[in-house]
Image 1 (cartoon, rainbow, N blue to C red):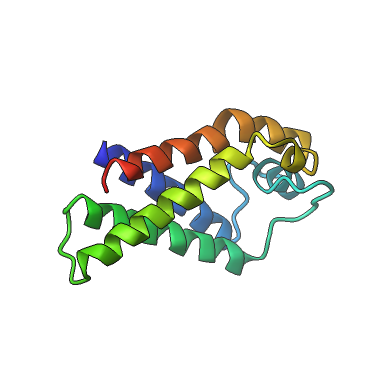
Image 2 (cartoon, rainbow, N blue to C red):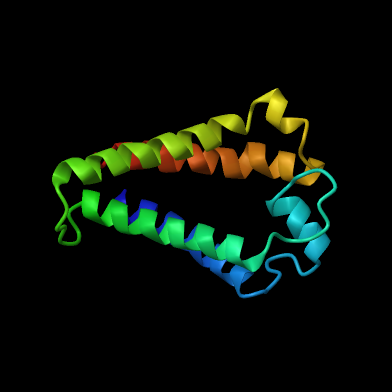
Length: 136
């Protein structure tokens, strides 16, 4: 399961890096891409590149944290610190995944994003939370 979690986090990080570099992928039209991956009602542009780069860095950091929790790389940090960081990661992804189903959040989203959020993004975040918790 460690390899699966690292692959998922790395793939999502690379996707954000692609956006940070200014590429509209996998949807070429910027408006359609923004509506599918950001989803705020009325959005017409992708977020600034620096925002995508920041998310990519956070996701690569999460990948490293999972590798540390799984003892795949040496850690020079106190074990308690990696444990706390791991639980923080579980909390972030669990909250993000759970929020996908809250009516208060859903009513402020584009229809395309809402659909993808319920069938892909939300469940993926919950899976990441569960798989991370299994490593702590």
